[in-house]
Image 1 (cartoon, one colour):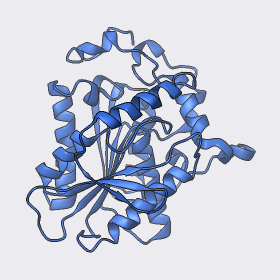
Image 2 (tube, one colour):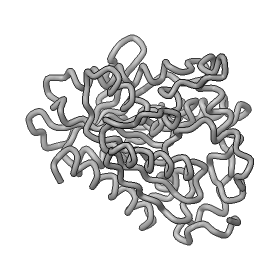
Image 3 (cartoon, rainbow, N blue to C red):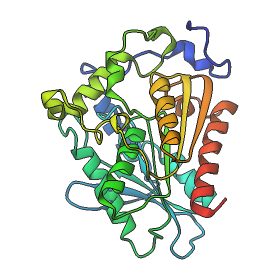
Length: 302
């Protein structure tokens, strides 16, 4: 596939870089994130869960008793981003579906490698499930990119511990498989935003000591999990021009083979994070609406 094979609706594709996040650019990107956070108008209640974890809570205008909830995990390659970056998306879901959306502020690699970010997300999940004003039987897990990978891992961890039983995994182009870093058959010309170089940096930062002895735990890279049975239903969305396309499609098929209901939403010619970068296109709006529909069916019964 060449550079010309992007969906024609995604006009920004020709101007976007193939690589943004790397070891060299990370300090600058983190500074920009911090400055953006200062300039942003808060759109949620910020709650400290414990000394290390906080959450942004988006509540709908029309409150109902013990509503369902979505625990949302932001992306950023495991090394970048914050709980406020998807505020518009979280607010839209809260209002449209009449649910509570909670976005997690988890600690980032490489300073905090696996399992710290996942543990932070589980801390937020336990906090959410334990709130008296939330229905613990109607909680969904969701995330984009690295956040999607953490959401998939969180579903595995919740199954392992048996304390909380999420009803859906909402995974947007999730980062699931560290083994993609060793592939040599990927044409970088068809990629935007997240490249093989970024992927190697992100996984190396996140795995850290977890790779000692050459063994990567499935909770760090969910695609390595052999037994996917008993997991909550899943919705996985990804574009064909996304580095994660192959691993996401494979994971969806493995979930289905394990008896897990999994809807796979493939967007021809779409690059990584296209829906956030070009949100006004019909392609992006359809993608987001598909997510909302899956959530509505899981949390509100459709």
